[in-house]
Structure formats: C-alpha cells, structure tokens
Length: 446
Image 1 (cartoon, rainbow, N blue to C red):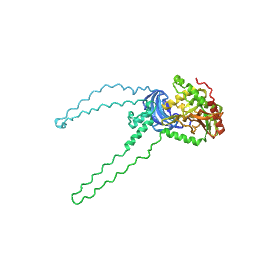
Image 2 (tube, rainbow, N blue to C red):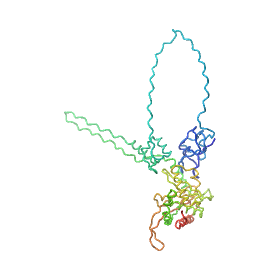
Image 3 (cartoon, one colour):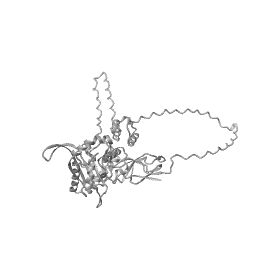
C-alpha cells in the first residue's frame, strides 16, 4: 500500500487545498497520471500518482485544506484493475417441489380479472453531445463548465491561440447572472374607466410611475483559493521583513544591440525569443556570487548562507502569480537561462509544474517591465531576503560624459531587500555589480 501525501509547493507553504479528485476509489491509476488538483498561494496544479495500482481510498474531501505531508489517499500496488472477481460456478437447479393438491371447488377463491399492462414508453434517443470547442481546455475550465452548465461554444477565448481561460468563464458567468437579475418590465397601466354620460365625467386617474430600479453598484464574489493564499503570503512577508528598495538607472544599450543582432538566429535555431531577462538573470547570478548576503535567509537570530544560487522567476498567470525556480542559475549561460525561463513559464501557465520546481529558491526576479511598468517595489518572497524588480527598457535622451546628448536604452532596476540583514550600502554595491556587468557586457551569446 502506497500513501499519497499533500506535497509542499514551496518553502513557506505549510498547507494546501484539495480542490478536486480526478480519480474515484476503485479506479486504476498509472504512475505519474494526474490524481487530484490542489491550490496554494504559489500554484494551482494537478498532482500525479506516486505509483501504479488501484486507488484504494481517499481520505480528504474536495475543498478541504490540510497540512503538507498529510496522507490524502492510498494506492494498492497489488491491484490488477481487472474489476470484480469472477462469479462462483452456478449450482445445479434444485428439483421442483410437488404441487399442493388443488382445493375443492367450493373453497377456491374467485378468479380475478387479468391485469392489463401498458407497454413502457420508449425513451427518446439521447441528444448528440455538443461539439468540443476549438482549442485545449484546462481541467479547471472543464470543471467550471460542468458545474455551471455552460456551453463553452458560446465563450470566446482570450488566451493563447484562442484558448478559453478561467477568466473568460468567470466573465461569462458574471454576464449571465446580470441578465438573469435584470427586473421584468412593469405591467402597462390600466386604462381609465369610461365616464358616465350624465353628470360631467370626473378627471381620469393617472397611475403613478413605476418605481425606478437602480442597477447594483457592487458585485460580491469570494476570493479564489489561490488568491486567498497569495494574500496571506504577502501580508506575512510584510510583517516578517523590513522592506527597503534601492533603484538604479542602467544603460542597456550594449545588451540591446547584442540581442538585436542574435534574436532572429536564436528564434530560428532554438524556437524561442531572446529577451532581456536572461541577460539580467545572468548579471544577478554573478552579483550574488560576489555578495552572498543577498542569497541568504534569516532563521531566528541565525543567518543561513546558501551555497547554491537558485533564482526564482515570477510568472503572471490568469488568476495569480507563481515563482518557478531555475536551479544553479550561475552555471548557465544566456541561452541556457532563456531556455529555462521559457520552459518554466510555459509549463506554469499550462499547470504542468512539478512540486520541486516551485521550491528551493534563494533569490527572485520579477520583470514587471514586460507589461510596460517603469518602476515598482515588489514584496520579498519568504524566506528569501531580496528580490530584483526590472522595469521596461526604453529609449531615453542621456547626457554623455562629453556633455553631448545621446539616445540610449535605459531601464530602472531596483533591489528590494530585508533591512534586518542587508544594509543600504551593501545593497547598492550589489546593484553596482549588476549595473557594471550589463553596461559592459562582453560574454558571447552564440
């Protein structure tokens, strides 16, 4: 018998919510086949079966939140999944008992008229199943469609390739509720009575106007489990760390030229785009090597220095945020980092991350510049002590050393750090290292 436990989806995660069972007791499961869905503040994903066999029992109900490492189910590895055991051989039929003697005619009960039975109505043939909407659907979208009786063909997807996202379904539900809540038009006012011919008719009564129904000014809906967990984690981080942010203006012109020179070849050869983020991640890894306090964590009155440099990259989802981790980031070049970033981001959005890919991070980077933001103050991802915030790269007029004005590619990059452990001077030295690497980039890409 194999125990299935609630996995830990990050160092600071102590519990998870089991949102849905994908198998029922008695079902056959294969190793790594999706078994149930969970939701935490870091990930909303499917958890695979740890072994092949028969799902013997489930110990946690859907919607229940339990601590990590709690046993939620058991799998019987010895089960063959062939179903019920064969029926025992049929016994020989017993000899019929002799019929009792017929009673005398006087004692026979009066015969009842035969009961006429009507033929059972024939059930109409089942309606044809609706056609599957175009584009892949996540298990969460399929579940929402079943629970709310939604024809997904009526929803226009806004995701990649026209994929229907959870937000699309929620918007459709909100519109449907608004239509159903719309009040019916008031009945027409009754016509005034016809005046009598004598004496002079009284003035007809005028019906008062119907009361005006104002549209609801608010709409209340509960937070999703993932959103609720993110809220708890963010508040915990603000209570734990003394947040301070330092911002440096970095000239990305040299990196921009290298990227422009190689991005088409990288796209053609490897199939992914070359962005600014792997250059910044590479510079951050080098700076963390030189300033290890930014790669540490705090445990009580102790400082934990991490020998590995594992950088988490924040990925925006349709309903939240997740930070998958690039392990040993200092050992990868720009192309290796770009490949890892693209792979983790794609699997994060398709709910295919593994539990160990969202834990073990020692430093984080959030690229809000990809949405056009110039500057931000991100919240530290506990138990880390620093996070790098990257603003958009924009053409900016700059005064050069010889007092000339030139157009340069500029980005505002800031470090938010925990002032319990890191002082401002140390943080600025770290940022000067990052700045020097990016402004004087010399590493070959291809």
